[in-house]
Length: 126
Figure (spheres, rainbow, N blue to C red):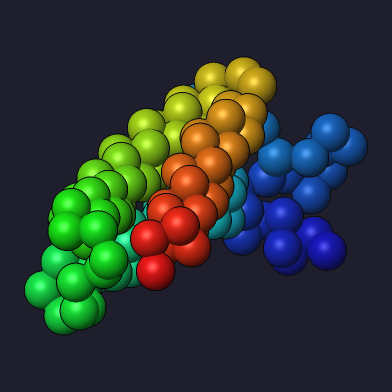
């Protein structure tokens, strides 16, 4: 145990553990936040790919404007997912550095609601 404390920069005799500099964040939390940001980007790319597929591969729906509307909406939601992921990552990064509260689930709820609306659009205009 003392060896692991020395590796982390702490003193084995200090009962409070190693001294932490203000603003220092455990790298595991920072890397986890980055992995979450990459998941937002993967989601964004999937939505954008779906939008391109709807616009250029899917046969026209019964309503002539439905395909354009749904495909364009998927593209916009994909772009929004990338922006929401970036904003959320910055908030988490700041909260980790400052010790403040973590951001709430609002961005996840917005993205979920938009995907459900697009799914309903597919059901209505199939």
